[in-house]
Image 1 (tube, one colour):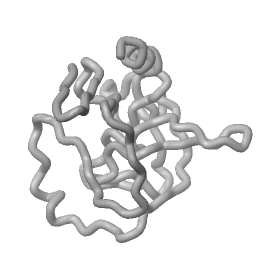
Image 2 (tube, one colour):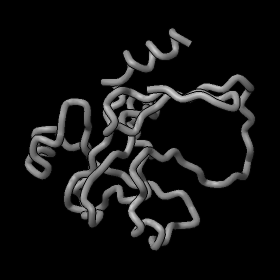
Image 3 (cartoon, helix red, strand yellow):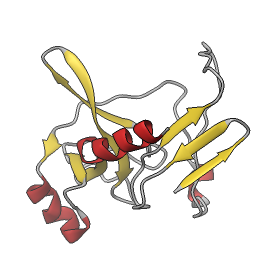
Image 4 (cartoon, rainbow, N blue to C red):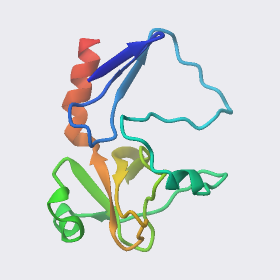
Amino acid sequence: MSWSGSGLSAQVPPLRRFFLGVLSSSAPATAHRLGRAGGMRGPDPMPSVLAALETPDKLQQATLPIVSNADCRKYWGSKVTDMMICAGASGISSCMGDSGGPLVCQKDGAWTLVGIVSWGSSRCGPFSPGVYTRITKFIPWVLGVLEAN
């Protein structure tokens, strides 16, 4: 699926359940020190409960263990596919409002994006794993979009 207008274009994978997309612009991007929070919204309306949630003033981070897909399926069953990676279930978890945020791992001193917050417990349960889009499964798609543009 793709979208374009006002000098911007977006490509998203055909599988709608994953938080992933490639944005491109006909104009150079400018970095600003201060800005407003923003996001992309799909065709489904956001639950009204999100409007009532208080959000922190500062960016939050947490150290989470990676959970094998086999163990993650003990919580979530067949909803967990190989296109996903799980983390958490250790007393802290991702929650509503975190969707689209990064899951990074450190290897050989470098931080690498391995997942994008996708879904988890509707009650933000800290003892069930959060489910993330597994970035490595989408590298061929991203490269194809970049080569086509």
